[in-house]
Amino acid sequence: MLVDAFLELLNLWVLVAALVGIISGIIIGAIPGLGPTMAIALLIPVTFSMQPIPAIILLLGVYQGAIFGGSISAVLLNVPGTPSSAATAIDGFAMARRGEGGRALRFALYASVVGNIFSCLVLMALAEPLARFALDFGPAEMAMLMLFALLVIVLFGGGSKLDALIMVLVGACAGVVGLDPISGTPRFTFGSFAFENGFQLIPVLIGLFAMSEVLLQAFDREALVGDVKVPPLKSSVVRFVELWRMRMTLFLSSLIGTFVGILPGIGSTVPAFMSYSLARSRSADPDTFGRGAPEGVAAPEAANNAVTGGALVPTLALGIPGDAVTAVILGAFMLHGLAPGPFLFRDHGLEVYAIFEALLLSSIPTAILGLLFFRVAIHVTRIQPRHLLPAITILAIFGAFSVNNSLFDVWVMLGAGVLGCLLRRSNFPLPPLLIGLILGAPFEQSLRQALLTSGGGYGIFVGSPITIGLVALTVLSLAISLFFNLRKPRI
Image (cartoon, rainbow, N blue to C red; front, top):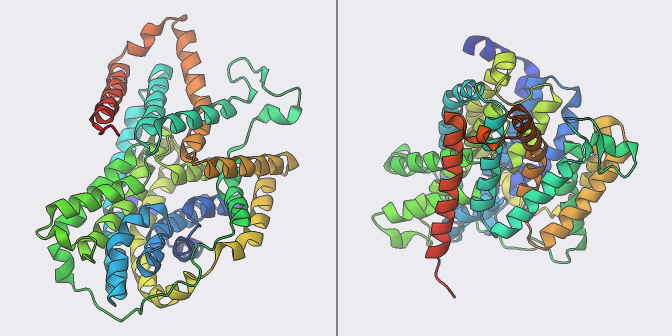
């Protein structure tokens, strides 16, 4: 299987897709205000005419490149290109101010490669066994699993738990619009035939992440970057012995990023700061952190790049997205006939392992292109996102229309854009809404199927070792969240 999958990667279009994805991702990640979620949402319609393997590799290349690209503006301008790069900016910009921007970027690049390789190996090791285990899941097990995933998003996603709960419920409510999955009767369609298919995922996510950004930038009078003076980028070398000295930091940061990334909805920002704090606590000279410590750059970059592989584990094995970006990628898999979940490896094992190997091997061009891109990065970071708004708007409209060749989807996209803009201005998180939309309908269907099977009895939800384990995890998560809330100092 592994050899056959590798042979699939020797296709010219696969190599072109990987390179285009990585280059595009680095550029998009380096521009403050843009990000991998918006970029992938816009590119999904572009992949309609592509074969599944190059299409998914293109999108994952953007994901991988953008996470590293965010460190470029974080180091050079102290303006994180992606939220997860905020931890990198603490020591990266301090190094840049004393003329070591080149060293900081190299530490970030090499740590990114280490984190990516580690998480890809974990992904290849865990995804298929987890999918095989999930084959034993019935409706009750799937309902409890999705309930646990939604709860984790609310409790540990960061920010206000009430805001996250509201967003999950809004997404779940939007997911039930259309035909009832059990009886086939229309629900919340207001007598309109167009609503019977429900809200399609691609138009909604394009609106939430791309069109909302356009609206925010259009009404924002302040430049994100402006005429910030970029410190000189001197040529510098990072020796292997320097990386070897921080091997435990890189390993622990990659470990944190991978396994926190597996938890649904948490994303890459939390593990980046967790790794930074751990590296500081383990350092022999913690006072250097915040003043330009190389480990303060390497630790968060290894962690946030390791999230890419970790977040794909539940996405591919269970059909439960690990974060907002993998929620978008999940939509791309489904559009190309690769339905994530327990049957993915059985029905499309060749394609899946080709994608895994491409993710692993893409570390090589990422390192090469990253080294070549440092000089160009100074100019890229000065691009104002508002200059790209007309192109983003056109791509968003054509992308929404091309899903079903329907103007209704365009209106859905525009409506989602307005809603996303209002929610973001009110500091409501969008990832819980998107994941609620994805999991809401399957959760309802599994819940109702389980109740129909049991004749309305709730004992089915504690009737097997798997459901009992999931109930225990749910209760444990609630207890941990309550414990940390009680330990917070009262103001």
